Image 1 (spheres, rainbow, N blue to C red):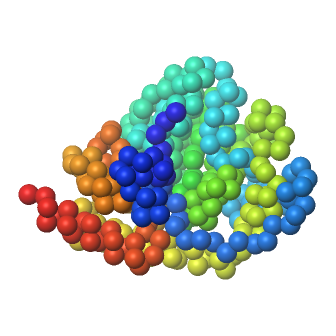
Image 2: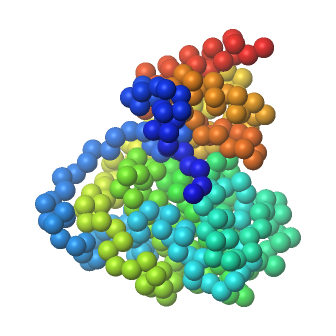
Length: 330
């Protein structure tokens, strides 16, 4: 199984620091608790109902056709490669590692690309897959560019798969409104923007036939009834979404400024995290971990992804740790 952020218990055991004493900045999730609506008892007692308005609420919030609800976008990531014959799949790298792993596991030929090399490689691909904004670099590609790539792929039966897990803070870059076009697949994550990753909910926007094929593959009741009951009113909470978007934008800029102030100017990022490419990434990762601060380490390229602190105490703790890092580092 691939390594992911958020493995706080493992870090606590490794460093001998109690779980409650950690500041977890490793996940790229909104760190603020969303006011949770009441979950009716019947949601726990009955099998999930597919016509309960969840998908319609998602269509309203995301601004696209009615999607397929899945148990986190991870379910779609693992299912989509099983819906094509052997294909040549280009993945814009670095990105969320589960994408390439899923296509490789199903026997497809995966090649890593950079945004600058896509034009030269596109005619040799069956599938192009990317994360926008990218995880972990924060790279953001313009919709017009992506739609041109889609047009060229779809003309010969290819797919453009866009993982928009972090696009909620810049929704004008989303392709959801175009997702009824054949060959375009857009994945959205509920957990990151709303800070509710434990709900395990995602959505797949694609043509009706592809959604139906994926639904058949995944089977019935993929999303638990309590999650469906919880998510529907949250997806309709326009005022709460606007407040969340403003707060995340402010704190994303605040984090970038804090890192720069300590000589660690980010090389990329978005409202939910900042990304620093650094030869000393592993050393800094360990330095912070020994002080109970967990960030996400990447080996290729050597870099750190740092999420948002949840409160003022967390901001001060991160600031103090980076200050002492500079004092302790020759």
